[in-house]
Length: 231
Image 1 (spheres, rainbow, N blue to C red):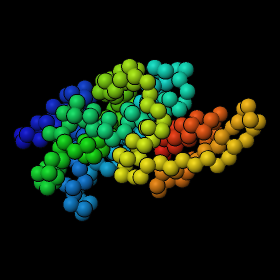
Image 2 (cartoon, helix red, strand yellow):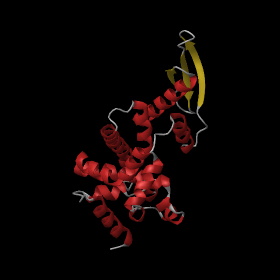
Image 3 (cartoon, rainbow, N blue to C red):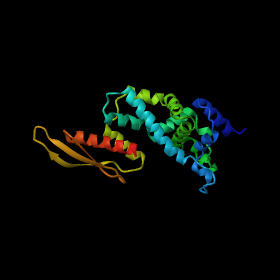
Image 4 (cartoon, one colour):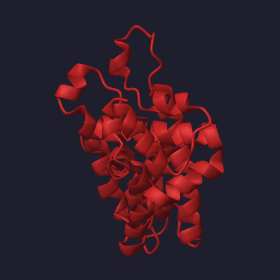
């Protein structure tokens, strides 16, 4: 038995889920580079797509349990901190997922087993595999085990300002900084209402209102993050 196969078996034990269909786990661990673009080997990209939604659902479910009275904007920021690529890559490291990955030689030589992009995607794919093989309860058990540290940090610290979180989100995707613009002001002088738009390159702008321009900007940033998290 080679080292990678042994690592995959060890990963299965750490997950605490015995796969009925071990092919699902192997597919979750297979990077697109292995297929060489020929489509002969099923890689983990579709599972990654599913896993992103599975993790998002489980994170939203747990956050609602932990913070039942929190406003939606605050929950959205906490959700983003739990499900972004860096967070999933860190979870993958805690799973020791890297040694179990199936990578092409070139990716292995360039440190692919510790790249955030590859690890984050594989983490999502593994969660999809657990869900498809054992159902949402099995996936929930894995989530609660491996996202425990992230959930604890969410409880120990205030959620980031929405504008800061959106800026980091945009930069993490190689986009310019978000752009804000005040589009309207209404109401009497003693109780004005400001309408602000926020735009990020390549995305439709989002509009929000607030009692001050800053409040409206924060609301718009939170709304954009929420929209993209649900996309």
